Amino acid sequence: MTFLDNLALLAGRILIAVLLLPSGVKKLLDLGGTTGYMTRMGVPAPEAMAVVAGVAETALPILLILGVVPRITAVLTGGFILVATLTAHRFWEITEAGPAMMQQIQFLKNLGLIGGTMFYFVAGAGRYAVGARK
Image 1 (cartoon, rainbow, N blue to C red):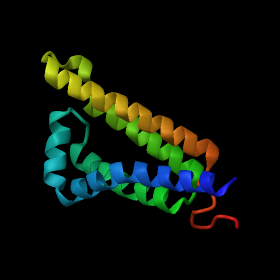
Image 2: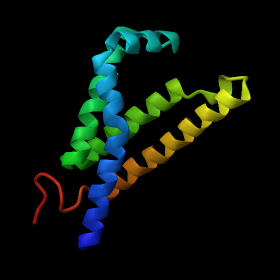
Image 3: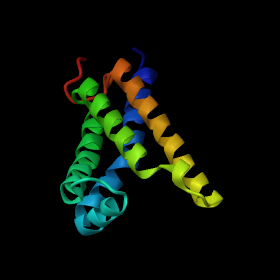
Image 4: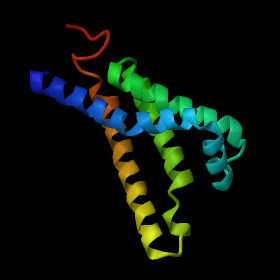
């Protein structure tokens, strides 16, 4: 792999993490608000799921940035994004055009992120990762 290949893998990991990490920290710092949101979305056991979502959305981006256990991180991150997408961005249930379009954009953006985790699964973390072989 070339220098640019490895740099692109590092940049890709960081860019996915930048989207997830602030949201995870916010969820953990406001578990009451997160629980309320999950309750409104009809998520079962919203108190527990608020903690799970906050921890996942904080820990997985850190693993992405570090580049450790890339295949496991890719599957867990992609799976988390899929569940969150199907739970929170159900644009097909919204009757107002504007809000439906915004949720559809979020839904499609998340599908792109899942695609990014698939690339990460195949390509790995590259040279610029914790524990990478030099």
